[in-house]
Amino acid sequence: MPQRSIGPRLQPAFAASACLFLLCLIAPTTLHAVPKEAPKRELERITLQLKWKHQFQFAGYYAAIEKGYYRDAGFDVTLAESNGSDDPVDVVLADKAQFGVGASELALHRARGRPVVVLATILQHSPLVLIAAGGGEQSVHDLDGKRLMLVSYELELMAYLAREGLSLDHFTLLPHTYSPTDLMNGKVDALSGYSTDEPWVLRNAGFAYSVFSPRAAGIDFYGDSLFTTAARAQKEPDRVIAFMDASLRGWQYAMAHPEEIADLILARYSKRKPRDHLLFEAAEMRRLMQPDLVEIGHMNPGRWAHIAGVYADLGMLPRDFALDGFMFDRNARVGADLSFAYRWLGAAVIASLAVALLAAWQVRANRHLRREARSREDAERRLRETNEQLQEGIASIRALQGKLEELAFRDPLTGLYNRRYLDDALERELQRARRQGYPVSVLLIDIDHFKQLNDRHGHQAGDEVLKGLANELHRSVRADDLACRWGGEEFVLVLPTMSIDDAVERADSLRAAVEASSVRYRDTTLTATVSVGVAAFPAHGLVVRELLGAADNALYRAKRDGRNCVRVASMSAVSSA
Image (tube, rainbow, N blue to C red):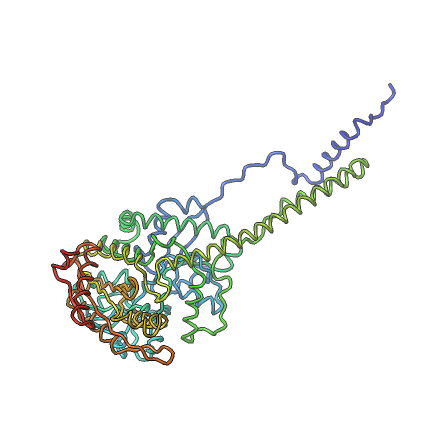
């Protein structure tokens, strides 16, 4: 039988079959009819280096382990306690841990060229303080020449002492034992500690002590922050984001369930602290975190720059320091995995060659495919540009949101907390006072004849006087005190754990300091006096409204009695409130 030639309608089918056969021979690994399901990824072993031993300070990480947040993200996490001498930054940079918990000294390390990247800030205000033996109205300058326990990487306290004009050479520095017992036994005059920790021990022992916070010198640093290395952040951004998000989920759960996490710490991690101590630590951390006002983990680039600027002011950094890349940008990526695209392109080239050899009609088809590819590339390029613009807009909105969050509870003129913040903070303080049985005193301060001063010298002069009083309050507050501008020329100073007698002495000392001070405005020296009303919980009020009303009545009596004086609320004032 004679052979029949292949008809013209069968030629495309034959060409396609030949191409498929050729591709299967040449590049069998590039074509897959049905993608195989990827094998489940084994849990990645991760070590998180803590700043200290197990306690509520690290509650969010315990919760992330216990609730399975790390496991869901693909991590098997080990929490490494500190031995008290190793700096977490050194441990992470030496690759002995993949992540660490540091504080504001991270900015100093980065500005000095050490490749650390901060991921999230847990504490909006640092708990690091100096604690000295003896109560009363001590000043940090009273520690000059005394015995002091200080850890080498507590740079925030070193900056505080330097700003106060106190050189470390003036102190007798002793190795830190991390035990407030040495303070009570007189082995040391002062030691570094956390406002969330040592005060509980000293208060329960009935030991008189004083707390000195860097905030008194205008050094308001961030507290605990989660960090990693720049190399990890650049090479594994998705894994870093997964670990960070799981950690923040843990913190949200821990702060919503403090009693459960306290029991978890005692059962799984450490019995070093009793349950009441852990819950005291949780309450103090909530005050420093402000989770009702600021999202847990929030960071502000301007505040980190300010922290580094304080170090530069004190000679710890050069003026031209750089923090570029210090804050982790979760929107940055190293570049997509193009391996599949490369395999597809290789297959397309091989197919094009085969089709070119088989028939001219496939040349035209390839040209059509290339035009479509160029159209897709143009569309993808436009999409990338649009996405970059969108991410820039989101970053700008987040930066603005951070600034708005700062302004939400700060008075823009004086930098003090505003009335909105006072109402919530004083309510929380009274709740703690009821549980723990300590007094809370309140000073309501009013500048005398302020309207006359404004009328005579103008409102700008009045603003300078308001800022002068605010500076006086900044200089006099303790770590636990709360100074607020209540409105107009009225200010409020909340004094936790201070009795009414001590509060009256504090008020009169403040009144005398204001009377002795002056403010220079243009060519005029301005002076002012203040009247102060004093009230205390629980003697003069059990709730915020009663307590402030009693202080206001006492302030009215001070005005009526000639001003420039201090008056204490009476029980009748409470009734009228």
